[in-house]
Length: 456
Image (cartoon, rainbow, N blue to C red; front, side, top):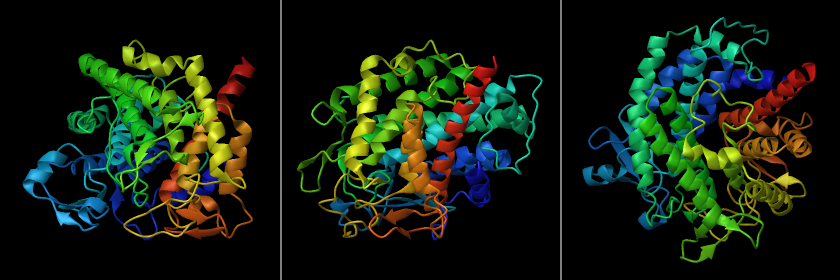
């Protein structure tokens, strides 16, 4: 709770990641917007959702540069011609710099930027619309605006009293067609029709690791997008669309289980390729996002905002809601694999070993994406471990992020060199702070629910 109060002022200062990064990154904004919602910054959220989706790529809408992170394009940016923009139609850019100018970092739009923004937008609108239906809301805020530990529906209802249902409906009317168009774009990334999306080098958050192919993290982003969008569609009386999107989520999750589970390694692994074309099944910490995706909006998710949503009957949710014994066992094995293979002397690192190649920059070991500690992804790992009742691991990881003995809490840095405990990159890095705050909110939500059960 002290950490939440200490970090609240940083979150509300902007939607950009912070530090030297002044533009809006869609993937990072998805975490910051959720955090804003729980801080009560409703007006800011609605404005930014409009702003971000207004930059959805369409031919001749605005200048798009692309390719700066692509080895196939020799890491040289180009201005997208109309024909290229047509192939990008429906995606969100990696970065929104200013009116009329955005960037796609890789050769193609990254999957996670579009998918995570669908997920966050749908989650926020679902929460807003569902609690608007409740009556006799009450609100008590005594924490100076930093209230991410409060998640009762009455709390959210009181926040939403600041805006009218008409304004909320206007936002939904604007973005839902755009999100459906974004789903159409992402579906095209399944090149071989195996229900898994394929990507090229550097087309995700780890934009120097040159990983391509079928990436677990990217499938998780896709599943989160589909799951949350289908619930929103159901809550806005678009049952046929909700059913169709829900079935896509089910098929994507089954695809991960069929293709990306490694019995030999006892965890989910990318079906990745190096730039030279060789297969590379390296374990990465961000596979934990898949465990979050399959438990999202289930009883394991203390932040779910779907109590009034009639979406549980959809076939596509059955796979994730049931979380059968086999799926549960695989999740626990994956968490253990991350702990035994990617924690170096109990530092949680984003890769289990040093990368064989990087680009556009040649990275030394323990630099940027090369075998380093990222608070952003560690926040996701805490959330995944919270979903599976790994309280001791959560406490240990949080102690690494919020240590008072360091000049600044580790959670404030973009990344950290585990060899010398040196913070690097943007500071303060809002994406990491928000990811950690979301994980803490989930843990506190579970504690509150347990207290309530004990009282009854």
